[in-house]
Length: 268
Image (cartoon, rainbow, N blue to C red; front, side, top):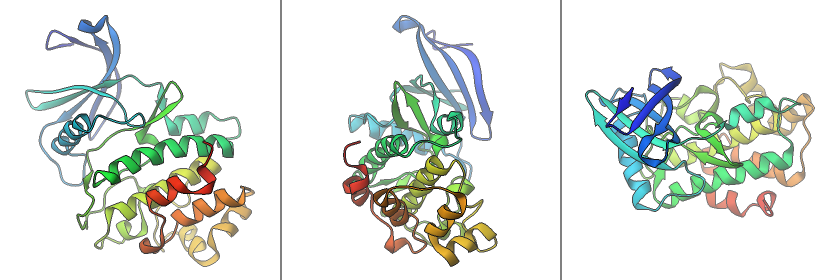
């Protein structure tokens, strides 16, 4: 399929409720490999909103982008679809975790990747934007760099939210509880779950709800007991970072500025 006499869509990489991901080529840039996201133009509640992502893409371009956010090259509408053209990456961070021989990343590798993701989130929060769908699946990897993507659920950072959005493993307890919540604080819990999965190879809990025995055990016994039971050891500074993010009470969580300055991430 050829779009705008420029973009050749060759291979369908994925298809879901939020649209289709294609791999193709930019014929006007020496057949440069690209990825194109095709999404419905109309908004659907609690799903990625193409209009919001379109707005965020324009903002990111205006702000000059960031090395840890995927590079967007073009966007346009055709018929009932919105198309977003972006750089081709080798895969996502979850795939990298799953490809590790031990089933999880080495601590040093985890911290290296995590710092890059945290820098992207810091960039967003500094521009008063909360992502609300932070996950390893939404971090692409290109030439060794971690790059955050997928901004369809993002909101102004000062917006009080009450909708349950994101991927179940990564949702903060207050998001699961369906009450009002601070989206930036919810982002920080999701960052903590991302680091937890990189270090352990598994989510902390299917859902951060007392209906789940894993979450109940976490609340009762704490993070140290969970890691000990799983046979996971970390340095004291990495444990401090993880514990500071995985606070059930949102007001007790580290901010992204705290994360960037944390001793565990210095030197990465």
